[in-house]
Length: 193
Image (cartoon, rainbow, N blue to C red; front, side, top):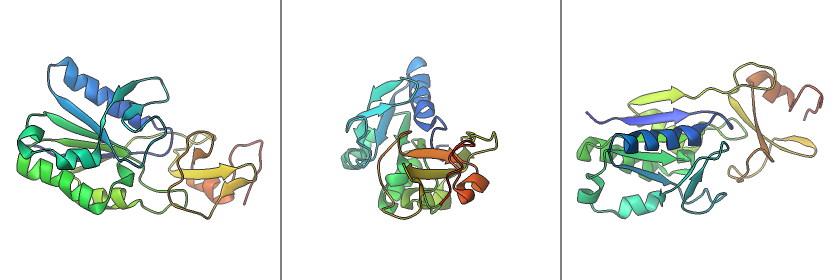
């Protein structure tokens, strides 16, 4: 029985590395897996998944998956979607249709919340409809579990702005809730906002 999986974590929790490892696991046993991501994430190229540890693989875009004939989708043993937080409600519902009507498992990876601790639309819909929800854990600089994605600049934590601003370690850091609230990017900085 196929399922819809949502694996979420804060920034730098190895979500993309996990997606790529899942893909390679399927390939290793001779099964067909399809990698895709939303067209919002263009940091590493439009059709590339790249993790911070150096793994990378070509992929398709989620809208391209939606344009595929059902019979072609059914030839895959698994669909793996990265950066799923940027998906629309309609795209998430399409992924659930793949599971429910084509009997193909869909494994999604992404952030749960943005830099203001608000749910992303894709994540919100997945929380509502996914069969299995799993947190991929990472830690704050203090050693506690990091659950918040802090956007920062030279002045400290950014509290206002557009929900989506692409970036990596140069503009985001995973923090525990306490240090997110205090605006502390690291113990030495004492930066607060």
